Image 1 (cartoon, rainbow, N blue to C red):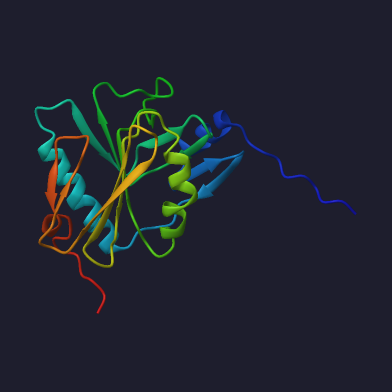
Image 2: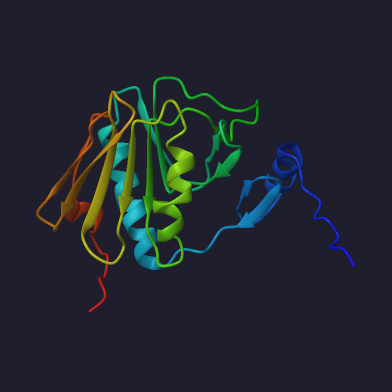
Length: 191
């Protein structure tokens, strides 16, 4: 017996389903993948950082979008929902619905046990193929630790680690510096 081939959906079919769905799903290679739920610490760290960026970007051409704005990696076809995406200048969208961003300058992911390997590995490989992307930031939810990766002129990525509540996350390509004490305000770390 032969296996029945799995039917692949098109990006148009995915978007038609996703735009009506109550649960968000990523999309790659013809398949939808339900997103894992976030715990309290993940949500608090994400919201704290998004709030700080929103305040810092007032009066600039930059804007931080969190949670529900999808990003398309045109080079690979991945549709994903980063925790925070930053755009400076005019945002570019896939279509007139304006819910799928094409030109993030910064992508921020808050790591969780279920997503850390993917966020550091495969997803990071996809994101790095976005021509506009200049910074990729990984935020731990278990300890005060943030890793910032900055695209270099030769195409490589330079990592800077910010560890401890007394440190300040300094973005390299957007006008923002955020104390880790603010990112982790009201976050409870495991014993």
